Length: 280
Image (cartoon, rainbow, N blue to C red; front, top):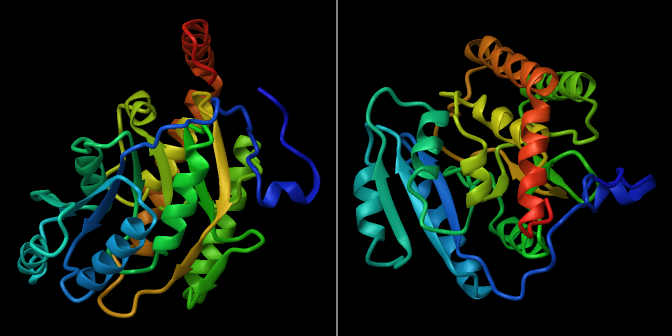
């Protein structure tokens, strides 16, 4: 695996740049959207997302996971199905949680790759297009960062922002990473990579940490691109700071133990795949 590029190239190019050969054919993209009580936000999110991906000729499905919503989310989604032909919905029963809803979605994708997008409109549909095109260059994963050159962040709550930067700095130091936004939910994975990251353990937002750390530890190639984020315009944030500390810590320590005790198992696996014609 080649070393990280030096200098400012880090901002726009991948750290681990061992990608497969560029693909001439396109991939079908599954856009996985967990939604818990997002009836006031999700219609605008889905309409804009669908418009942009269709405009850019991306073969896709939009898979919304109704995470046991108690508001009018279900009615809104049903009403949009006639308007958005690529929309599918599934229901995640109680207990609900961001991680459980995303896991439910990832288990039901019909595409060759999946991207996780928030229902509240905080992620940019244009970033979906950019990440998709980067993946077509042959990467296993494309990770977003809101804190590198050309990224944009709007109305990030001050306390959450401070805690975010401290926690990400801790992860970088612990795992020796240059990637500075591991907690960012906006990431894209090939379907076969997601299968290789199982079993999934996280029930809540700590899944955003589990997936990329496992992908890095298990030797999958990845690129890092700037992405935009803006705070929700309506509704209530589902991330509760006081509830997440121990959950984040658990998954970080789990991945850290895997890195030091089990990483050779996955390197051997990747070597065998390479012999069969895959360039990890």
